Length: 113
Length: 114
Image 1: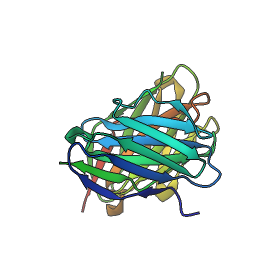
Image 2 (image 1 turned 90 degrees about the vertical axis):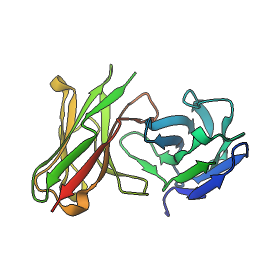
Image 3 (image 1 turned 180 degrees about the vertical axis):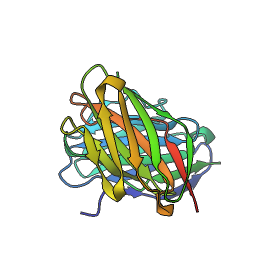
């Protein structure tokens, strides 16, 4: 398996634009997580899905953020409209169950100017 | 709710010296504990994990950690640092009823001096 795949790796956009981050989890993993990493706040969990269903979205900062998982092999995180304070590295991770580990993608570095 | 505290945002050691990165956790139920490493511009890679089996856990690259319930600690050690160990290290906690949701500490950046 190629691991968790995120795209794009880098995204630069102007304030007010819509941004869509994509994630392909490892096949067979039934949980998927979106994290945001910043210098100030470290690694924050934004939302997680189990069997494609959102379980906990309490970490989503505002209504401008939304996430979907239409099937077991694809998830998106959308920011609309984007703001400079959204600049961060966004990680996706997938997980097969307890006594295993969460596997992280390489991340998407988002810069909003 | 669970939480993790990593003592020291930056640790510097000389090559060949002992590495000790500190992690304390808080959890009302038995925890599962993890150490992840992040190299620049990379994702997180698992070093080792504690899932209620042996309290001394060995991981990759010569790292190990000991779960001490009485001290609510899960410190990461390596007997002899190598230049390639320079990276950021994250301690994380979850529990059986969290569906794998990891709560991370703030991270410790390890520098290794020649």
